[in-house]
Length: 131
Image 1 (cartoon, rainbow, N blue to C red):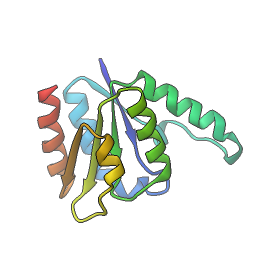
Image 2: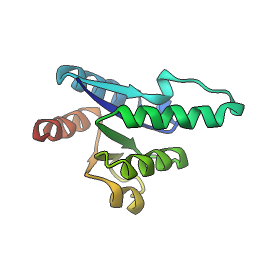
Image 3: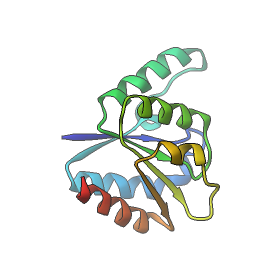
Image 4: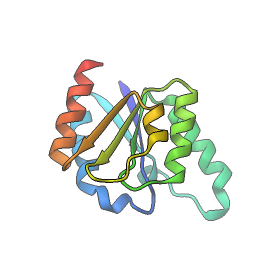
């Protein structure tokens, strides 16, 4: 089974409930495990080294990384850089009319600008069929 790592801002995670649920359903239908790191793990402020080691380990075990950057996030940027250095395909996703990240775009294999969770699921589904 393939594995996807979803990099998303911890503090803004609650804004993307519908989008994440839509991706979870799509990936389940396509036999891909979706790891939402901020949902699976919880670290204290003094566990920053353990948090990053765990994130890097999970990215290393993943087949590709999805970076939700409708709202910019330094942590997601670090995860993108690590995945890029490891040669992992990176899917840059963001809602239309949100700020565009040229840095993320420069590291990405695919870019999806979406209107809503249905549009995201359709666009991501097309990319999954290409793989």
